[in-house]
Image 1 (cartoon, rainbow, N blue to C red):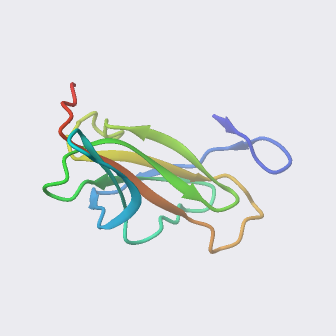
Image 2 (cartoon, rainbow, N blue to C red):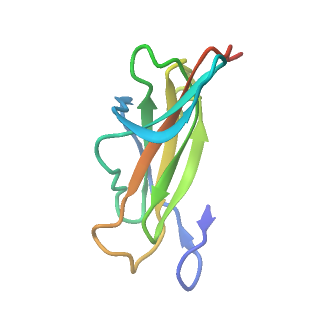
Length: 130
Protein backbone atom coordinates (compact mmCIF):
# COMPACT_ATOMS: atom_id res chain seq x y z
CA UNK A 1 0.00 0.00 0.00
CA UNK A 2 1.40 3.40 -0.93
CA UNK A 3 1.07 6.26 1.53
CA UNK A 4 1.45 9.99 1.12
CA UNK A 5 4.93 11.13 1.95
CA UNK A 6 7.31 14.03 1.60
CA UNK A 7 8.19 13.98 -2.11
CA UNK A 8 6.86 10.75 -3.53
CA UNK A 9 5.22 7.43 -2.78
CA UNK A 10 6.46 5.22 0.01
CA UNK A 11 5.37 1.82 1.13
CA UNK A 12 3.85 1.47 4.58
CA UNK A 13 5.92 -0.64 6.92
CA UNK A 14 4.73 -3.24 9.40
CA UNK A 15 2.26 -2.19 12.11
CA UNK A 16 2.75 -3.10 15.76
CA UNK A 17 -0.35 -3.68 17.93
CA UNK A 18 0.26 -2.96 21.61
CA UNK A 19 -1.74 -4.17 24.61
CA UNK A 20 -4.38 -1.73 25.91
CA UNK A 21 -3.18 0.97 28.30
CA UNK A 22 -5.50 2.74 30.73
CA UNK A 23 -5.70 6.42 29.95
CA UNK A 24 -5.18 8.35 33.14
CA UNK A 25 -4.83 12.06 32.48
CA UNK A 26 -8.18 13.78 32.26
CA UNK A 27 -8.51 16.21 29.40
CA UNK A 28 -10.34 19.53 29.16
CA UNK A 29 -13.45 18.15 27.43
CA UNK A 30 -16.31 17.42 29.83
CA UNK A 31 -20.02 17.40 29.14
CA UNK A 32 -22.43 16.89 31.98
CA UNK A 33 -25.56 18.38 33.49
CA UNK A 34 -28.20 15.82 34.25
CA UNK A 35 -27.56 13.82 31.10
CA UNK A 36 -24.77 11.77 29.62
CA UNK A 37 -21.22 12.55 30.67
CA UNK A 38 -18.35 12.43 28.16
CA UNK A 39 -14.74 12.81 29.34
CA UNK A 40 -11.49 12.78 27.41
CA UNK A 41 -8.45 10.96 28.79
CA UNK A 42 -4.88 10.81 27.46
CA UNK A 43 -2.36 7.99 27.58
CA UNK A 44 0.44 8.86 30.04
CA UNK A 45 3.19 8.57 27.39
CA UNK A 46 3.34 9.68 23.76
CA UNK A 47 3.37 6.90 21.15
CA UNK A 48 6.48 6.81 18.95
CA UNK A 49 5.84 4.58 15.92
CA UNK A 50 8.84 2.81 14.36
CA UNK A 51 10.48 4.55 11.42
CA UNK A 52 8.66 3.68 8.18
CA UNK A 53 6.11 1.71 10.22
CA UNK A 54 3.12 2.12 12.46
CA UNK A 55 1.82 1.35 15.92
CA UNK A 56 -1.73 0.78 17.14
CA UNK A 57 -2.42 1.63 20.78
CA UNK A 58 -5.48 0.53 22.72
CA UNK A 59 -6.54 3.44 24.91
CA UNK A 60 -8.65 2.18 27.79
CA UNK A 61 -11.17 4.22 29.77
CA UNK A 62 -10.45 4.24 33.51
CA UNK A 63 -12.79 2.13 35.66
CA UNK A 64 -15.99 3.96 36.45
CA UNK A 65 -15.69 6.36 33.50
CA UNK A 66 -17.94 4.43 31.13
CA UNK A 67 -17.47 3.09 27.62
CA UNK A 68 -15.00 4.18 24.95
CA UNK A 69 -16.98 5.96 22.22
CA UNK A 70 -14.12 7.50 20.24
CA UNK A 71 -10.51 8.49 20.23
CA UNK A 72 -7.82 10.30 18.33
CA UNK A 73 -4.27 11.57 18.35
CA UNK A 74 -2.42 14.86 18.32
CA UNK A 75 0.53 14.15 16.05
CA UNK A 76 3.91 15.67 15.29
CA UNK A 77 4.92 16.47 11.73
CA UNK A 78 5.45 13.27 9.75
CA UNK A 79 3.19 11.16 11.99
CA UNK A 80 -0.32 10.42 10.71
CA UNK A 81 -3.40 8.75 12.20
CA UNK A 82 -4.01 5.47 10.37
CA UNK A 83 -6.55 3.54 12.46
CA UNK A 84 -9.55 4.53 14.60
CA UNK A 85 -11.86 1.76 15.78
CA UNK A 86 -13.41 -0.13 18.66
CA UNK A 87 -12.21 -3.28 16.89
CA UNK A 88 -8.75 -4.60 17.78
CA UNK A 89 -6.92 -4.91 14.44
CA UNK A 90 -4.97 -8.07 15.32
CA UNK A 91 -7.93 -10.31 16.14
CA UNK A 92 -11.24 -8.47 15.61
CA UNK A 93 -12.18 -8.44 19.30
CA UNK A 94 -14.05 -5.54 20.86
CA UNK A 95 -14.05 -4.35 24.49
CA UNK A 96 -16.41 -1.66 25.78
CA UNK A 97 -13.71 0.38 27.51
CA UNK A 98 -11.01 0.24 24.77
CA UNK A 99 -10.65 2.33 21.59
CA UNK A 100 -7.82 1.53 19.16
CA UNK A 101 -5.80 4.36 17.60
CA UNK A 102 -3.07 3.72 15.04
CA UNK A 103 -0.32 6.13 14.03
CA UNK A 104 2.20 5.76 11.23
CA UNK A 105 5.58 7.37 10.60
CA UNK A 106 5.37 8.33 6.93
CA UNK A 107 8.18 10.85 6.56
CA UNK A 108 11.90 10.39 6.09
CA UNK A 109 12.58 13.90 7.35
CA UNK A 110 10.71 14.12 10.65
CA UNK A 111 12.76 14.47 13.84
CA UNK A 112 13.50 11.50 16.10
CA UNK A 113 11.22 13.09 18.69
CA UNK A 114 8.14 12.91 16.43
CA UNK A 115 5.30 11.17 18.25
CA UNK A 116 1.56 11.19 18.94
CA UNK A 117 -0.46 11.93 22.05
CA UNK A 118 -3.31 9.40 22.17
CA UNK A 119 -6.73 10.23 23.61
CA UNK A 120 -9.88 8.25 24.33
CA UNK A 121 -13.40 9.64 24.81
CA UNK A 122 -15.30 7.89 27.61
CA UNK A 123 -19.07 8.14 28.09
CA UNK A 124 -21.33 7.37 31.03
CA UNK A 125 -25.10 7.40 30.79
CA UNK A 126 -25.05 6.47 27.09
CA UNK A 127 -25.92 3.02 25.83
CA UNK A 128 -23.25 1.99 23.33
CA UNK A 129 -24.71 -0.59 20.95
CA UNK A 130 -22.50 -3.18 19.29
